Image (tube, rainbow, N blue to C red; front, side, top):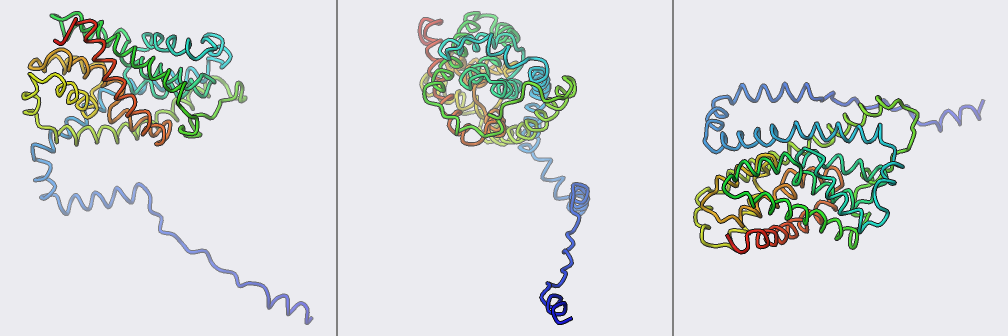
Length: 342
């Protein structure tokens, strides 16, 4: 009896778990609705300003342009994961990265999409056993050298057909150059583990189920960062005065730098950026070419997508280097094709 009493005395008292308030998306929505009703007059005056309307239009335009191609990209990504065995990819591509990178760059012609579509596809290629340098070359080439982009460029510049060739050469050189640089200096620890995790050849699931799950996962994973990139582009586009561009008509070097930065800020889809560049007729062709080469390679929404897909360490190293390489390749292609500064 004494032993039992001692044991009972040493047992800890049962503590009831604390109840947490059930706060979910529905509760947050209700709070936001209440705030909107209470402060509706202040919100109405705020949203009626010209800057807010311009930024909202830019945000909707960026997302509306990118979402169809993002969906296309995740569908292609799901199809690769479900129906293309890793062994096939490893057999098709050359074993040496120095040769596989240009092959991947030229293969970008086959994907009619924008930069948002190429991000999930390139991650899927890495998870299928393709070298990161090869997948990254495809990521940069696909949105810039596919037929839709080249045709759009030809339509936007009917009086300057050489712009199509210059854009093709500059964008392809950017993709191949970055692929080779990554093969030489890139480190796998810069990439997030989720992007490098190899997919099994056969996980027991049906191919169609694997296709649906992969596409759904990539869409949810990439869609949030697309929204972040769209918001960033909207805010920055409002902060850049249009009058600044008019003062660059006679300054080539400054014009190249400003147009490269503008390509990053505006984040225009590669299928539409040629028409924006064509409308800036006060600028020479060379700065506008740099705008077309830099835009599909690095912009704020693409940086956000890359950070969400491959990790922040990768994005903060890859994006600045891509920016510099794209400027150099764009200028070199312009000087080669145009025969000088135009």
